Length: 269
Image 1 (cartoon, rainbow, N blue to C red):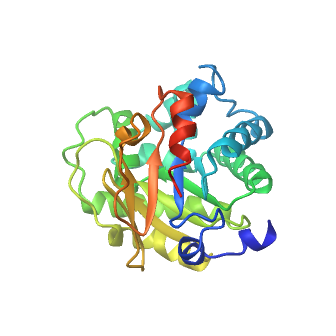
Image 2 (cartoon, rainbow, N blue to C red; image 1 turned 90 degrees about the vertical axis):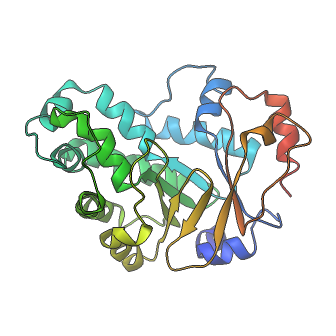
């Protein structure tokens, strides 16, 4: 386990510890909630219970990296905390809601505890998945009393990335392999990964890789390696093919048939 966790992302992608020809990163959160929890709430509020839940899923699906979906954690946290919602709505300035969310002391302390326990209990390296600054800005923008995100631009995204970069420093003690910015979501103007230099400065400093996830690909900061996305049809048909790419990223559909998923996992060689 120690040797695995000391690898760099580039080394792992070149020679996956699973023995696969190409590394596979699976986002199985929604599927796992449906199948392993039978639709019950994900135990976000109990870090050890969440880590055990994820470990159970990982034991079956064998992703080459453990994807900690902090995007989903924050979504449920905001939805269930009226006091936090009120604080985020206190001012209408663009970015205020996101900054308030990321500087909320109680939430930050809890999410670092969650990530710490998760990192200590997984058998493969950990990747933090969070919304890209542009997407996070768009998701929190309605708290500014405006649901119109059309005015958000690259400058807005760069400003938001400074808040995210400051927040990421809280994870400095953790042996993370990478931070994955999920840029999927509402159609907004394209924001290149290079826009988020404040985040890149932090990830470079802590020797974490930085990547951005799109609908059709994953790009890595400072690397020519590219990830290809496994299509949803792969999980429902034995004839589904795998795309070309240096590594593979896939989301197991929430309502996929478990027996079919297990069969398709064996095709990821």
